[in-house]
Length: 120
Image (cartoon, rainbow, N blue to C red):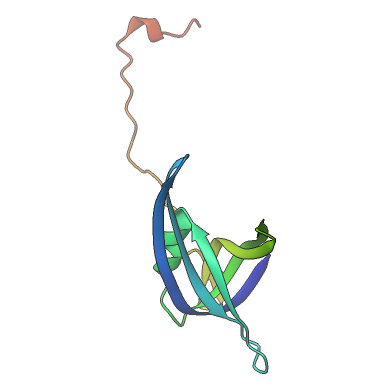
């Protein structure tokens, strides 16, 4: 699912340790652009998305890609909107605020070992 809106708040980052190691959870709130009935939606973020979302300035127009999931606990249901991608509106188009970096360091290989020779 995707939704667009204005980032209005960053939620505190939480950390912990589980059976799979360290984890980090963050969040943010957007407001939809509906002039008559704007909605505020809180999203949770995990992993690298925590850093991406926390670096976006409040007031920025964003597009959020997310999943909605509900869990039952003691007869009550709890729903999360989990953001897995956040893009910022720059000059009329949405872009990743932290573009992926590409390693441009040249790789060198040592071919001096005779066992590495190819059979042809």
